[in-house]
Length: 224
Image (cartoon, rainbow, N blue to C red; front, side, top):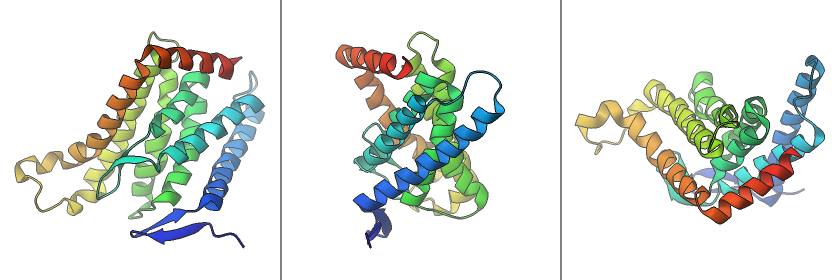
């Protein structure tokens, strides 16, 4: 029987077989949600087969790149190799509904990757709401520089969810050496330190002309 997880540094991390299993679970959740929405809608389908394929690929790419951690913070959160961008791209290509659902499906993987459980609301704020919020990039898809604006909006909204969770559930975990004068800002500083840094790196990369051209071509491929 394949081994799906191994224990290291206090965390259960998935093996290759585990990654395949988790991505399959997230894709299944996305497919079930799309079937439900497509049946309820009277107009254009929310998810076509092609859209589902791109959503599944985005989830897989986001999950794999979330393990490439440039900086890892001690109480959760890290600067990754553009993992947020993969989810934001779905919103940018297909609209907020697809983006939010894809982010919600991706949150399942994030929860299973590093599960922190204090209460149902904390789980929702740190996982479900936070990663679903990346999909609001879709609200900017028709605007000039929509990808960058949508990405920044999604990253900010994700940080807002983590910050609210920080105030409600994580204040008692504040390090003793954290400046007392800034203690009321601890959740904001902690969560936006890694989110803002990853966002800044991503925006710089997206501003490179060759990357802009490549992104435009991928967008055409995804939408046609």
